[in-house]
Image 1: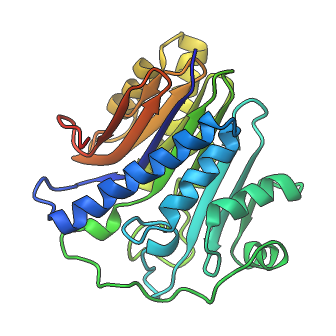
Image 2: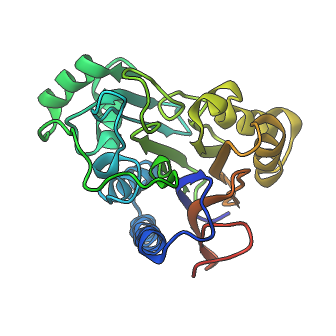
Amino acid sequence: MGWAIALHGGAGDIPRSLPPERRQPREAALRHSLQVGVAAIKAGRSPLDVVELVVRELEDHPHFNAGRGSVLTSGGTVEMEACIMDGNTKRCGAVSGLTTVKNAISLARLVMEKTPHIYLGFDGAEAFARDQIDYTEPLTKVEEAPPSNGDSQLGTVGCVAVDGKGNLATATSTGGLVNKMVGRIGDTPIIGAGTYANKLCAVSATGKGEAIIQATVGRDVAALMEYKGLSLKEAAKYVIEECAPSRTAGLVAVSATGDVAMPFNTVGMFRACATEDGYTEVAIWDDETCG
């Protein structure tokens, strides 16, 4: 048993011809965020602290579809959502419909810790945020026009972590589907779909939200481990290959024993991981490692 951390920056039809100016900033952000997470877990921070910290780093990066880089709805507005969950206690918090909050993942944690509820959305979540944290002016524009190759649809971010004692946590954050209907809610804040953790594993999914919800991706990984006795890698592979429709989903997951799984059935998935035994990986496609 040892600590492990894995994170993603979105899965989808990521072309191998992705220009360096779009690929390299994401790779650098994955490496940086991984280093932040590893340093935190080595310093004795809890897995819950680690996943929040890493996701905040990714939310602050403009090349991912979360926080600062969130895509626009059909109405030209931003509606962010996020979820965080502790594996041992199954305590969790989720938010949707945020327009003014800089780090949605931290508001999700405040919902978990400061309210009797699990999920707050839209005006109620915004009002709670104003009472709890600093907030910015409403986000109504992106820094650059969305590219025509679909690149803007990529970038949901997530992190899973386990410490040397087997404590698990997961966190996911997103701006949602580009040009989505106003009010649409995806898989990210849905416990058991895009985000899930228990005493066996922690899972953060990415891809097409409706497909991930229908396949209950996060909970199914845990259920296969619990009821079928599958390993983390076996369970994660089965869910992505057999439950989720082709070219729709990917996930990162860690087990209580420090195993890591990062399967996907899309063209690529921005991902990274590190384990206590010294293994590190940063990759996009299924046959390469960025370093």
